[in-house]
Image (cartoon, rainbow, N blue to C red; front, side, top):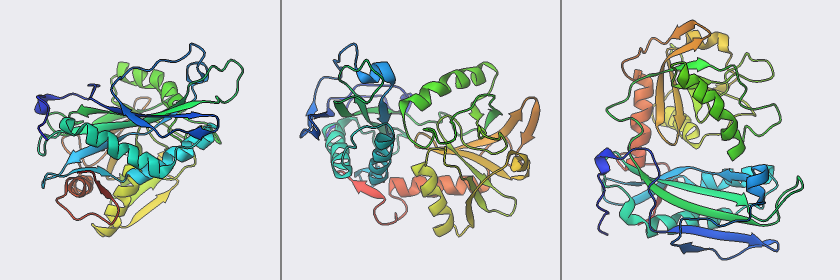
Length: 341
């Protein structure tokens, strides 16, 4: 298929509408068959549940062009499973996991001309989401829902190369114990906006959120999980019931153990021990790994030995290996790569 006439090398990370999007509706207790449509706009009642009580969940993933010319996605079955968990927590009807993956395939196929070519550094971002659409004025779950998937081509997260970032320990709490921090709900991201704007105003790239119960343990940032490397080259990631279970983090931990032969550990990570780590990174769909060079806690600076110029050596190996798997340079574990065409 002939690609769209887009300056792939200079794409930013923003929204560009593509030709088709997938829509399915839940009404009278069941999902309809769903279909691809042309119109990017949504028409809903002024009293729709999503507008009144933020009843919405979403996922984020990417489609790539591999070196051999195939269009692929990365572990979409895990996104499907996580959306089911998110929906259940907000009393929404789960969209079936097999249909979720099929909707991704249909939408990417229909927009194949927007999947950036191999080597451009760009990808096709995929956003599946679901929301309550019928009028709801009392505080209760909606009765009708819409599940949609749209795509948009995006440039590389790091333009001009990867540089370690500086983050601050946030005074705000991201999630409450027994709350919704472990699901991908829009409300979690809404409450992080003031904190990230505040961080940016103060000259920081991101926030480090501590657990809200004791404020002694590292949790995550507004949109990524932490990954630490000890001085003896062990990979450590925080364990918590109030952080989002990142698919990228899960994949990186597997790569560390089974491809690089490193010891891995998921456990409570106390803020007091952050100063003792050799490397630190933030992992998520957008960047895979963002290296952290410095953490600032109310004026106190923690500088990692890996420095502020480039990724540390272990995080670089993790990044290179996982992106190599995604792009088809390195053989993937069974089931990780979904070939679309």
